Image (cartoon, rainbow, N blue to C red; front, side):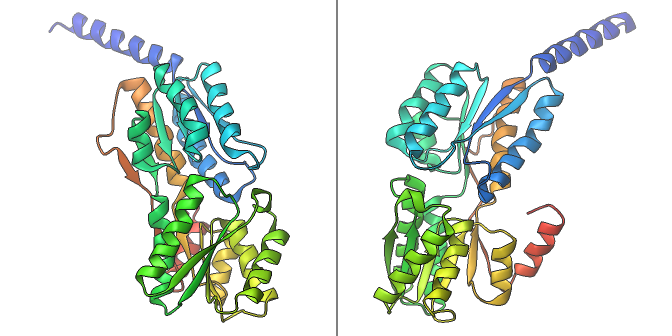
Length: 322
């Protein structure tokens, strides 16, 4: 090929690339409240992946509910907002399928690429026609907590559910109860109203009352950072510290300190940062280049954090990697 043709071809490719970058991918991410500790990590992951999208002329827009009181319908409305705002691609958790699936189906019917993340699993991705599922398997996450506590000798456990009706939370509790059962124990669920989620006082008081009414309980499982801290507090208020051991989903600085101090047995890590980062990256590459990931189920957990590895996790937090 002559030099002039090579230069012409190179120039054409450069123009094509710059045109693609100028258009970019406008990706909408449906997630939790921005002040929710777990979802703030998911949001950071999505926004960090979004820096690449922005450099290519695209954007990442986060849409989250103001509260979790009406989770399914509110999330469905956010999905429809993303469609109305001409999203090039959408990421979302399938928290409440009966309320959210029609909205997700509208995404697919509109020809908008979809990734399900955090909740719903590959089953939701298959059912809805999504490209991938990114996240942990909720049932397996709960199961890991129940199995851990059961293997440690605990026989009677309760899962604290502050978001009744949310499929992923129900799966956490079902998994916990089954994991404890497989290790020779018995599990149950303490159902609280959705208004209790994030209300440390309400959760602690409910845990205290439940333990006083059910003195045989020696293990508890909580479905998020704040609820775990509140559960630890409720155990203390019931005078059961050291007698009732707790494991919970996700972690923050205070939970790592609890594990160090021995007031919490373990935390189940589903790596929320990775969920946001991978989901946005997959869709950005697909919209811009047609790149797909053949492994449709991309698991980010569960992992168990306990006294054996908590120091390493703390170092990872300091380094900004956890």
